[in-house]
Image (cartoon, rainbow, N blue to C red; front, side, top):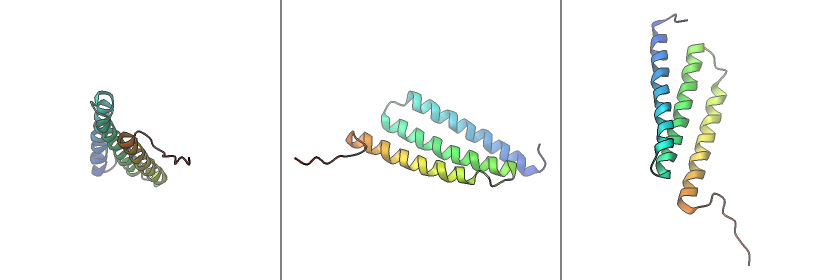
Length: 98
């Protein structure tokens, strides 16, 4: 239920972020290069963090703040590992002793 005028802005922000999520999903599907898909995944991670923060403000709770940290850490690891895979073709390098 909308109680304060600020709630209108919070719901509007959630709608705009939802459109950004849809745009990121579209770019993942249609992205011509793996780098475009990587940027779309990173954008989706940022949008998920923003949406979670808006949900915390709408519900007036701090229960989901750990989710924000978790999504941020996972988005960072995902970006680094996929970028390394695009660059070198492997994520974990194994040194061979011959």
